[in-house]
Length: 523
Image 1 (tube, rainbow, N blue to C red):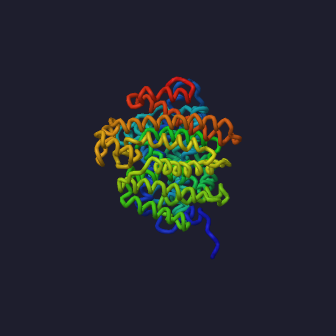
Image 2 (spheres, one colour; image 1 turned 60 degrees about the vertical axis):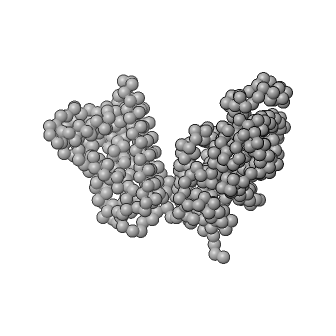
Image 3 (tube, helix red, strand yellow; image 1 turned 90 degrees about the horizontal axis):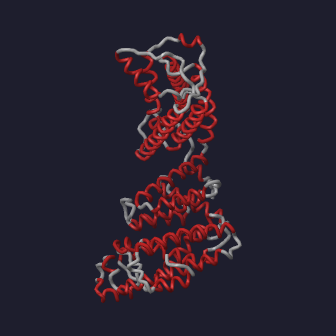
């Protein structure tokens, strides 16, 4: 067997310079490029407008021009050259046609925007040119330029910085003549900023210096390993967008995960990626994510790729799985982390088959299924966090997680045909008028047998919470205790919410038993 290529090498080279200078990107790359450009535009406009507004709130102003500069002629026709920067930047997705090529440019331009924003706030340069009015077409061009340039965002000139940055990035895709032409275009844009009296020479020089300094950052960010990390973070953000749009509760999950990541961003990347991978598969199998193909086939193909260590480079979920599996293996020294992942996916596939076949389970079978599901999930979390504990050390937390998950999604699962209510309870409920197989949640909970089961499960969940709290106090691992406490805090919050929203179902006779366990008042 030959030498194994690294992940970076197999995912592609940082720069692909083959092919024509201008071309239509592949559909997937075009979507990514346009979305990235749109995201940058929104970031730039927000930052640019905010800094100008904040500068306008105080009276500190700086002048960087000489008296000689005030004699520079006003050439309104150069407004066309000034505006041509928009055309230059619009070429980006068609010159830098892959995510690996366009991402470094966006990273550099974001950093340039932030640096300039700091200068705009701390060094608010005021133009020394007298206002100019010009009739006709050129006057309208100049008026539009003045309106979008705003008043105080002058030094360094972002207009010049962007022009030279884009010209140098595009220059790497063409020959010597092309590089000279792009450099000439950037020089003309820089000259236009002075000739239409939008900037002084010091602003232009500062913009060129900034663009030159950013070339080091451009090459640094274009390194394959860093691009892979950036792509992974963007994939995670895209997945969280899907989750949050589906249900607002995922916003809380997003906040918790990203808050936990602060100060240890690189080390916790596996947590963000792992959560997104598992939740993506769960959504696909639950029918919450449409993929245009059979969900079970889709997941089994991914499982095959993981087992064979043979991934599809063009698939984002396959790339996500590759990173997750490789990182989990390194964290666990190859001791079965991927087995936990495969077993968890197998549990999710079992839920898919239960829903598809309307399969009913006994109380013992349901509890064992949920125990195994959250055993693997918690094991993966602990491995990802680098905690030397196992899920077996937190049996009560697993029970609490299972109760929370089942009850939180019970109504939605019933509507989909996934029954997490024991078969015996459903049979008894059917005799009490809840119906046979055409289950309706509202009709089900009116059956005394189902209501009694919900009360018993609620009490069991609360008991598991309290036992878990006692267990956490005895853990020697501070990080393990912290992670368990985070889970427990979220479950407790949901427990209180569940009690408020289900007062009619949770009969009064449930509360004395609960108070005895908790030692306090009702939730």
